[in-house]
Image (cartoon, rainbow, N blue to C red; front, side, top):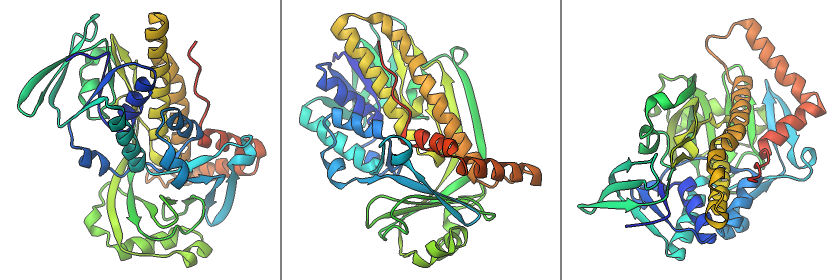
Length: 394
């Protein structure tokens, strides 16, 4: 088999990259070790930056998002019961975010991929990358009992934190930056109306909570929990009661509860590797970086990586600009580190850290109070939340 770009991973990053390359007349093959149903079963982010939504429109995969997604002009921050609304639209010159689940983004991109006729290979086992520093890299894998070789020009590693792409780079060639947080998020998905028309990020003495949503009839709620907590110890009743204790009283009174559709605990970490390129292999999305979910940046950062890489490849194939290949990692990392900073800041401001002393806790409360009391501070929060601009490829 031959293709121009081999894409490892059929999550939203790999599918979006494949769709954008297809629109530009660049051939790609996507390899995914799981089944399509398994990929769609992953419960992930639900807030899309304006730049991500615009990129989905450019890819021709936005029809359902534009019809069913919920445009939000703002969100609320709660500090010990005090509710403050961040007016995104007013503070950023009209920008908004789109509430639309990652599962639905993936479904739309899968359908667009199928309609394009481009090749996706699911249940591709034993994927290995070869000669990535040479002019003719290739990928081998097993599919339906057959050993297959895929020759290509470039490889995009869109296969997540545990994927084969990053592991194919010698350890000594990567610099790793990581922070593991001493708590996780217990998430509950339910077919109940959201408690508020916009998201609520709440900090309380009992810990952080988030009231999010997927639609006007489906809600997603989160609680900060210790790393030693187990999902099976949290009945639906216990979850709802604890959530009511952490959100403002008026919101708690309006909360409509119901049986959970899904419950899980996700640990929080910040993680970045540098560089994001090794020869003709490019790391995209979670393969190269992880952010805490507090700032809603995970999927959006993957989209900005895709934006940079696909625009570079368009110029490589259309104009012969191979000099731009070395710009992928610097361009992507500049935006990644700014998003890491915002996610770290939001996480630090809103969570209870078990090892923090009274002085540190008061400093964090004061910092957040300062930002909320200043138009410049609110603007900083707003412009980071809606997403910083994608960098041009020149």
